[in-house]
Amino acid sequence: MRRALSGGERGKIDTETLLRLAAAAASEVKPTSLVHLDLRGLCSFTEYFLIVSAPSIRQVRAIAERIEERLLEERVKMLHREGDLEARWILLDYSDVIIHIFDEETWLYYDLEGLWADAPKQELLRRGSQGPLR
Image 1: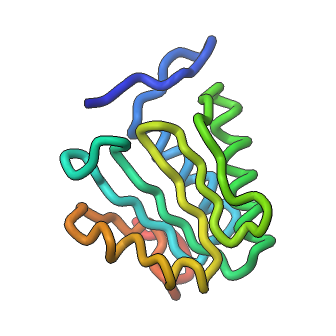
Image 2 (image 1 turned 30 degrees about the vertical axis):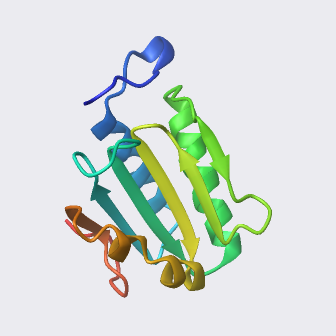
């Protein structure tokens, strides 16, 4: 089920557009990896996970801030944010898209991609590559 997301005066933003905008914003801050999982039909609380990893806590914060800024420009409301204190894992909840931003160690420990292995996966930036995948 796709729900139109708040877009204020600029109109409605669909789920795929929100996912694309968030991924583009994250990629500007040079993450280590960038993957989205399609959870439609597999869970009831969201449609997509965007999973981002970064080499440092400072970069985790920077990626989260860039995503928030970009989506705020489109007047998309965030439902919830977690993980600000230590910034090893920041979660940005936009309802149909939940964004997980990890430092490397935390990304390895929680292995969300392995936990949701049944979900179709698209690597937008592969670990060790020089730029976004086309």
